Length: 92
Image (cartoon, rainbow, N blue to C red; front, side, top):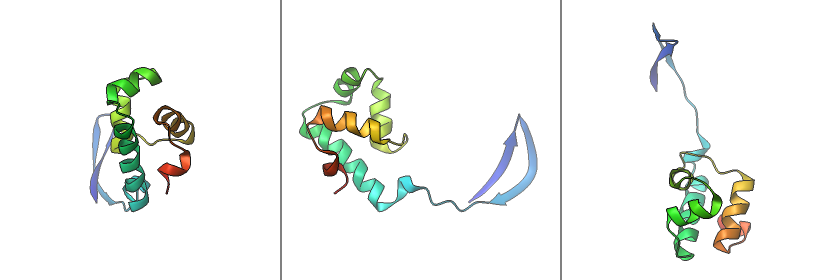
């Protein structure tokens, strides 16, 4: 991927190559994200319902489900409890 460095509003006319394998895009993490959304749907909840119960914004739930925000183990425990699932269910 080519990128131009932008630092404090000044462009440096330098191009560099970065190859980073982001774990959000692994097959395993994609499967986890599908299960996260499926668990919510199985529980009959909307993103707004979940957000309200977790005292978060709806966008928080959306970002978790899309992979824009990485879900940590504490957050997963909260989702699992709310959805009536075990943590193992999410990572099968």
